[in-house]
Image (cartoon, rainbow, N blue to C red):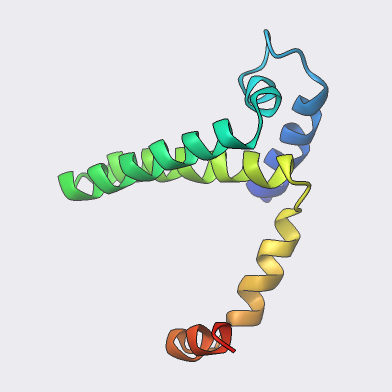
Length: 105
């Protein structure tokens, strides 16, 4: 499969021009960042509940929802997936403790 995040990025960008009556994503964009953040919060809680249930298929489903809504936020803010990939690449090979210490400087 081609890079699904890039494909979603293109579709989510197109939804900015769609009618909010015909597109869930467009309706989120129209409601603004607070509504998008509310959805991310809800999806985060659902990931936690799924993980506590311990059913892998539920975890996968809920993480997909969380990632999707996070991608909506990125497009709303005009942040490209490449920027996230670059940041993760920058951190690759860096210990988590070292990365955290660098943030406090």
